[in-house]
Every structure is written in C-alpha cells, then in structure tokens.
Length: 170
Image (cartoon, helix red, strand yellow):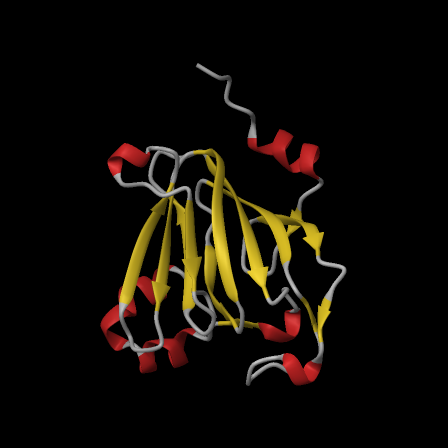
C-alpha cells in the first residue's frame, strides 16, 4: 500500500495557494490559443483561452463553496480520499457525484459540471483530503466566476436549503 502524502506536503510540492471558494489551488495549464470575442457563446464578454487546468486540494473540514462558471468544468480525481461534488442544475435538479478511485463502488475519476450550474463539494467523512484537478473550456476567467449568495440561492432552490446552508457562508 502506498504511503499517504501529508496535506501540507502536497501544498508545498505543488505550490498551491488559497482559493476564494475554499481549499487550495494552482493553475497548471492555460492554452496559448484564444477564442475571439465574436466566437464566444452568449454570456461571455471578451476573448478567452481555449482551455485551462488547475490542481485543487480540499482537506477534511474544508469546502468548495457553491459557485458557478459560465464554462463547462471537468473534474479529475488524483489522490487522497473521496469527495462529494454537489451540482444544482439550472432546472433545479440536484446531482451528487462521488469523486474517488473506488470505481467498482460507483466512485468516478472524472465528472463534468455543465456551465451555468451551481456546484460545490467537500471531502467525505473519514477523508483527510481530496486532491483533484479541474479543466475548463473555454478557459477560466474570474470574470466568469460567481460565488453564491446563500439567501438568493435558497430563494431560487428552496428544496436544497440544507445543502446550500452547508456549502455556502454568505
């Protein structure tokens, strides 16, 4: 069995920094190619890189607070224990996916979060940390990032109030 890498060692090894939604991250790729403003779908303003990728680390007790992006985001599981990714689709449907390496138990090593969906996540009980990656296309820009306001999100999706309370703090 492989040795468990301490959380702090992953932060140091990959030069991770605090992320506004929670946890730590490091951008690892930004496509040199861009999509012109006129080629972008509705809702975007200005050109964007074709794709970006990050490392993302959540320790036990940390949460990725509810947020949404205009672009699609593909999540990839790397190390540590499983985490639950909670997605509220624009139609109000809740999707909960467990990212992890126990694929025979239904965990997934990749999952797509469609642009325009609210999402957040956290390591599952007993998980010291979850080390994942996210690839975004068109590429990530903080102009396209929106952190949820708890009252507004609960007003829009009251059926998910407990989850929204758990994964937001505004």
